[in-house]
Image (cartoon, rainbow, N blue to C red; front, top):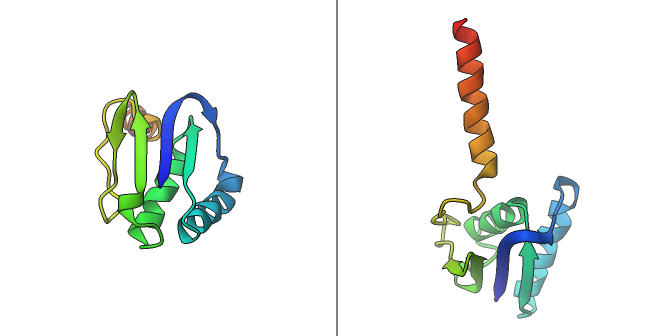
Length: 106
């Protein structure tokens, strides 16, 4: 089972380390080893969702924990996202688009 808690103070997985992280997750699944980890950025969660979508990690073996809620991806790597869960990237993208549209109208 892969259990990832998304919380402040968790570990960070950088863009430059994400492939190694993904390889480690696949190896843990292939060897039937559990993984319990706390992260404070969304990249590792998005990467695991990709592995689920690609069929490399069974969705039944993944649990995300956020504010005492369990979040599980479906077989396509899609998850329900409560407010505050891995949404900073999409929030920034939306604000960037709105700001750029406002500047273009001037």
